[in-house]
Amino acid sequence: MNQQQIQPILKALDAIQPFTQTPDAALYVHQILHQIREFETTVPDDPLLEVLSGFYVALAYENLWADYDAGQFAAVQRILKKFADRPALKPMDIEKAIMEMEAAGFNTTPIPIFTEASDE
Amino acid sequence: MNNKAHQEAQKSIKHFLDTSVLRPVLLGTHAYRQYFERQFNDERQYVSNYVLMEFRRSYLCNIIKFYFMLDMPSIKTVGDAFKGWSHKFKSSELKAVEQFVGDITDTFTLGRTIPKDKATALREIGRYVKRLDMKSRYAFKNIGRNETDCQRAKIPFTSRKEVHMTEMFQQFLEKFNDTDNCRSRCVIASFFLERYKEQVEVFLEYADALPNPSKAENKGFVKIASQLRNAQHEEDFSCRLCEAIGDAVIALEAPRDMRLEHTDHSFDHLCPLLNQSHYKHPSEPAILKRSQD
Image 1 (cartoon, each protein chain N blue to C red):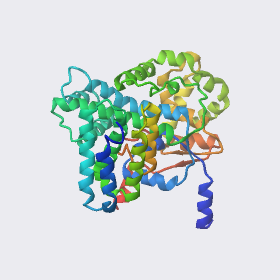
Image 2 (image 1 turned 135 degrees about the vertical axis):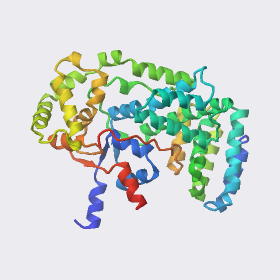
Image 3 (image 1 turned 90 degrees about the vertical axis):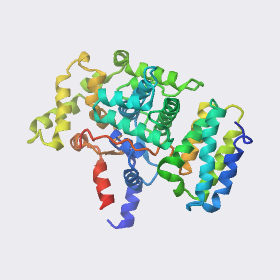
Image 4 (image 1 turned 120 degrees about the vertical axis):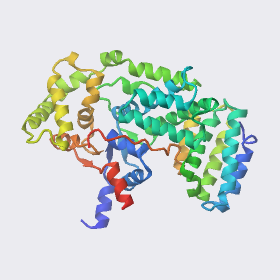
């Protein structure tokens, strides 16, 4: 995938920024989530999908999308632009992209795994 | 000490995380993660290779095992995998996997009875596990020690090459489960029988003198002491034993200039005996109750 191909997502990330933390953001998150799901069908082996999958979870789980601010969406836009244009994404690139997304405040593993304590 | 001085003192603490704290920092409920963010409001969080290995063993391995069950040709849907899993496996760690996979299917709006959604569920579970492992390696500083030369701690989880997830998990789990090979190459026996022999004797004497060994706060430590008492020769040590006495490994290996962060009672006994600074955090249910009150 290159910047051209992920343009719909980049465009939505631009458009969402004035509306973050309001119900109006739903329109753009809807576009992003649907686009990511479409990529899974059209370019299923693209390594950038590992990054986009983390982004999907960070948005969709318990509607966390409603909590992020404009700066955070701008940050993920920069991250996706940077990595989308790399000719061949290697596993290290994917890890870097995900950790940069985490540093921008997107928790790509928000699902709690709760077990009974063994020695409490 | 006034508030500012206390905050300054807190900033200078280096936090060495036991698995019981690493788990909620990465996988806890929102309220519990926020609690630890407030506690460790800085960059100074450390882990060891052994703690990372325990995290993989206790959480990631169980999810990967479910992944392989779901990937069986005999399993048509996520729902079938749930039924089989919960029918056969009752422990709390394995039930936690069910809850986690359920959340994955909900997040991706996958049908648990729809065969075509099985592949998506597999893919997203696999990706999630890879991200968890990556975060465990990147989010904390590693103290760099592996005093037991634990071989399971050295098995790479991710591949530098573009290998399919299933193959990557298979390679990892096969090596991780090859405990005979791992045990033959680690030095857990000499760690306890030679290097830390005196400290182990102190543990045993203390355990013998505990007035209420069956009290909840004492049971974990007493069990560790009992296991150590019975392990007198090289051949007595195994990966299974190491799992049972893991808190002792972590306490002995912990840097003495750091504070060991935990939620387990056993460290309340182990750490003072080693002059190891430590702090016992409230449990997740306690923090959840506080946040609801």
